[in-house]
Image 1: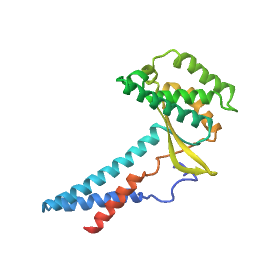
Image 2 (image 1 turned 90 degrees about the vertical axis):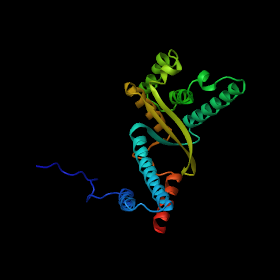
Image 3 (image 1 turned 180 degrees about the horizontal axis):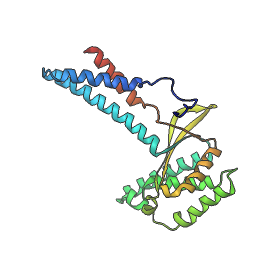
Image 4 (image 1 turned 120 degrees about the vertical axis):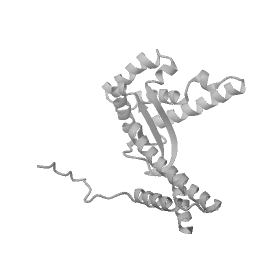
Length: 229
């Protein structure tokens, strides 16, 4: 007997409109490519090919981001968001001073995302309502890794940590986006940090992020170009 479909299963198989549009475009480009033609016609086909390639790779990159990173939206006044943003600002201010003095900011200070991650851990450890077990996990990593290891060794365990502004608002509050990626060996720390972010009303975003403004504009211009043909 075949496995029963879950309640959320699609009622019918369907290709996404974006995928269908790209297939249609590639078919059109292929039919145009065989005819040679003027330099202008070749340039037009090249523009279509490059636009289609860029849109395809942008979609694939969004899929990759969803697979690799944890992505949260968090209120901009949450203690974790405030600490992470300040750490990034302090890093860039110090790096600028070092460069103005002839030094290399990145070589001396290390990668900026580690300083942002350090601020995240410090703020997460103090979040109200965090369980004692999760607080202990963060403290243990801090004592055994952050305080003892060199920055670039730590970067092998924490691959990415970033916070940025968004245009989103929830309950009249500005939201910020946190993206973070842990090495697979630090699952316990990952669970503790995720719990702390959620305690501060952070919302875990599932699936690929929406298309950005440049991707939307490129898609719009490509449609306009096709309609001119």
